[in-house]
Length: 451
Image (cartoon, rainbow, N blue to C red; front, side, top):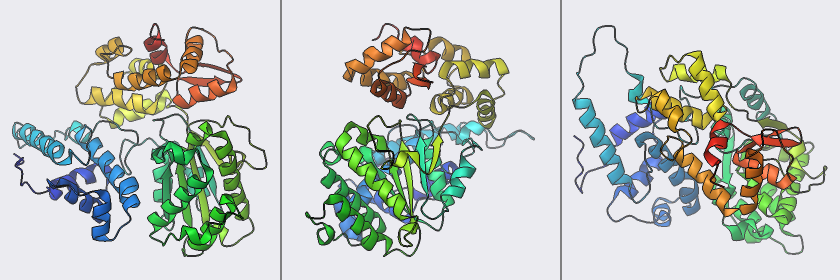
């Protein structure tokens, strides 16, 4: 049994083995450092940890720690945080040790290892090198080629949990010779997103923090030049000229800015200008832009000032029945075609929901009959996903009314553009020409009588 005493050290050897099984890579030195510090009874703040080991506080707080907790949460099957990491991990390892001790040490001759022993609860993204990642040949090769080109701009768009981050991570991993900065706009507070000057300073501060460069923002910020030009000069002189390699600037959840139209217009116009610079300026050609968004833009952008009509566009689609069958096989399941088609009809090929159902079947946690019967109820395996959507709709009565209008109709209907795009970004509806319809059977059945 794994010790759960107060003085139990971090079992790095066991954790590393689990991480390698999940991702194909060990914990990084910085991840190990953060876990070691957060394991202690008297936990230091991220800023204190950063100061002790000469790192940027924002880099640890915004990049290293969140990715570490997401990774460990996926492994243990419950949320791991800075405050609960020790108790949660020790409890998980103890339960695993107990279950292993009840299994014979030798398997019958010729019997294959149980795949469920290495399965973890599906999360928002699929770890690198995971055998559960489904390659989609119409996407990956084009992205891998594009990102290697000077001045590349790739746009990935899809609703949440459709595989955007998984694809983004593989594009970055494919670009071994590039320095990478990943910024997630969901990590920026509302006062930053709503103020262009603060947003651009936030951008530059994160750039230099992740690249471990001196910030010196005030040396470049000039009220007479304006924040866009100040930011542009900062990027050119303080970042691009200082780094002797291509740089990928990955912007996750860029559509968060659509809620602030004036800021969004200026920000995205600046990105388009940067992309134009890459066509003629050698310094700027080292910049590659990777924009990840949940929806189409519903704000007016001049066609010559928009980054959304240039570069390589990747609009992620749901899994096909064939892809669902392939994923089922990787889960060790031999499903009949009729079951695969039923699953496709139920969740519309939604990657996360599909994976969740297959995980439940593979681990013996549920039967297909039970999943199908309880799918659209609060008892079913999709309840957390459905509750999140219900809560979001309840916070926005106009969207709730619009979605009810769509779900009550057997035919696609036309909605105002903003409502259509917002519902699409949530994944609740899909576009069909100029109209929208409910994404799949699960949503239609669950929301009946709840809106």
